[in-house]
Amino acid sequence: MSGQSEEGCSVCDERELVANMRQVADVTKRCAIFLDLQATLGGPGLGDVREFGFYPFAFEAVRLINVSGLLAIVVTNQRRSRRGMFSCEEYEACMSEIEGQLRRRGAYFDAFYCRPHEDADGCDWKKPRPSLIERAAREFNIDVQRSYVVGDMGSADMVLTAAVGAKRSWC
Ligand SMILES: [Mg+2]
Image (tube, rainbow, N blue to C red; front, side):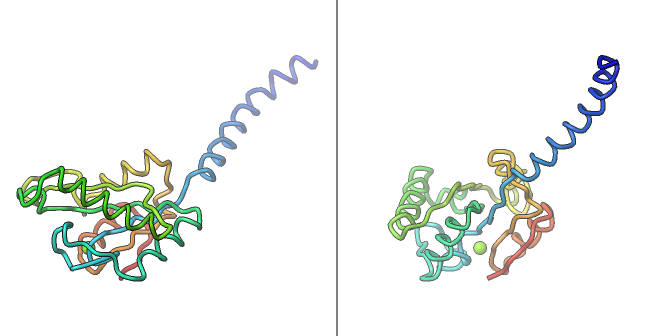
C-alpha cells in the first residue's frame, strides 16, 4: 500500500519539484543596470573613449547600484576603435583607467561589454542588436525583463531596450 502510494506520489512530486525548481531559478536570477558609457556616465558626447571623463554624479550613481545588489554592466559601441583611430591596447588601457577612477571612488563595474564595429560591418553584436545583453544575461544569470537599460537619448539604447524587453531610463 505504501509502495503504491509512493509510486503514485513520485510522479506528482517530480512534477511539483520541477515547477518549484523553475520558481527558485527565477527568484535567483539577478537584475542588472545595463549602462551606456558616453553621454550617459561621462563625456564628451559621442567622442572617442580616450577623451572620456566621468560626470561628477556618475561615481555615486554606480556606487549606489553596487550597494543595492544589482549588477552594473556597461554595454558600449566603440566605432572609432574599428576605424583604426586607436588600437586594442589603447582601448584596454582606457578601460583600465576608467575602471580605476571608479574604484578609487568606491564603485565598480561588474562587467564591460564592448563592440568596436561600424554599422556597415553587419556585426550581430553591436548595439542596438540585443546580443551583448543576451550574452551578459547568460553569463550572469540575469532576468532582463526586470532589469534596466540606462542610456542617453541616442536611438541605439532605445531600440536595444525594446529588443530585449528591459525597462528603461534615459539621461
Ligand atoms: Mg551614449
